[in-house]
Image (tube, helix red, strand yellow):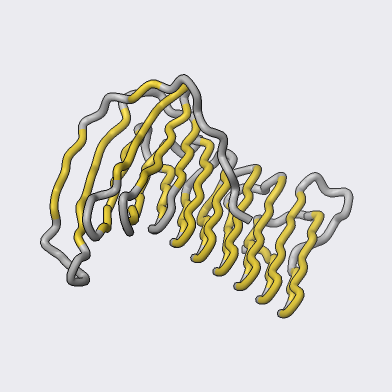
Length: 227
């Protein structure tokens, strides 16, 4: 279910203030940690975050963009990049050996967000523009979303989403795990399916509604309900 994002061409490296801090914590004989924090001084309308191993948290807060990376590695630290091109901020990294990054990104609430990780949890909150989030193994959670369009998925893990405004389109899917979508009052065109598990739909259903909800799990319970 993971989304693939196209590579940006003709990008320009951003300028920003970067601070580095080595923590003194080691969780194994060869495990090291480093914190990297920076702000973005260019206009950002879209965030694309391509993670590999690590949790991702994106919060709609304030008027600027701030990124915190908690890097975990054995030998060399991850080589992380942050690039802005045509209003799109792309965050990603490469590793010479086992490594990962936990990201915390604060963005304006109306930023379009597209994030993915191979292993790790994804948390989105306070966002009002379109959101796309996927993980191979981990939970995906959207809290207090004002987004009209949301697509959340996990291969293995729960998917939950709650909305402050009536969305136009919501897709919430997992192969193994529970799915729960919490909606404001209103009628919705609901597709709710579970191959192995229970299905509960507690919102008024209207096939002609312009508000479509697709909630599915291969193995797990599916719930679509009002707040």
